[in-house]
Image 1: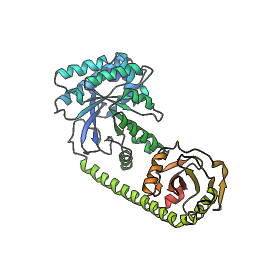
Image 2: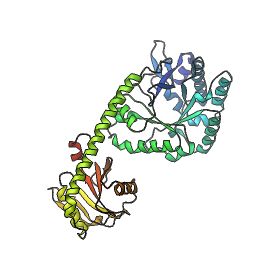
Image 3: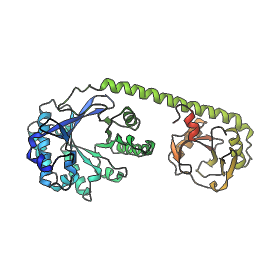
Image 4: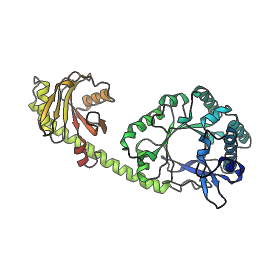
Length: 408
């Protein structure tokens, strides 16, 4: 509890003050809103966070309601004295919200609306992990709040968050934490999760917001994974008042320019590798006869591509593997592994899209980075059309990608 007693907080509500964490839009690099953070100002002037207070189940519900109301009233007073061009976000525990069917919150907001508050500027944030079996009742309440113009943000804190729940609740904003980059786990393990959240957010009409951005690399990650909004100390520390909308714009513009330059270099490196392999295939394919056995073909390809491939196989347009796996052993020799025959790879993401592209463009494709299950390492796969119905796939190891600039 960060050295504070709940009763001490409740007896000294005058010392509870709202701070405002700026939320910055990717498209304009301007502040578009603020999240209200409750802080407790001690007699010596030290500020202590109170976010723990609202999620502590041992604290009486009446305390939660009273502190919520106090913080929200103070923040709304400041907000209503502004031009209300920004958005204002309040965190609300889902269990507390459902305890009185949102009555305390809605009474305050509707009362403020009668005094000039624009409810379309208010966002209520709920943690996905705090949503219980009452999710159907919560969905109805959220739907009603939306009819009033209030928007909903769902904070996805847990790595095993329920995507189905997000679909049911249809939030306006999906919020994820960039702080995981400080973990020991590799960032790429999260990439697919956040890509899924980004795609889901787009499908349900929600914006993706990355919080907890404290470093350049975290902003870069948020930018690369579809973040529409950003917040964190790297961009702007929470303030006791509203600040100029463009206070971080130049810094973010500069960072974005660096991101774009780096991505261009990566794309160029990937294109150059793809074109180079394409040329190798054009030179090598005339030596492949139409009546050659599939296993003979992949061994020929293996010998020609031994410097950058470790596994090769052939599939037809339906995704059926017609050849064995040609795999390079520890001493660099190619071996056939027959168990790969007749496996169906049509379930893989983008399989048919890539087959169609190869047919139309008449050239090979390089996949994105992904983890190979058998080797437990990050690889890329290159695919090439060797006929109208046959496609060869080459797996490129991490070691080779690591040595080439821009391929990781």
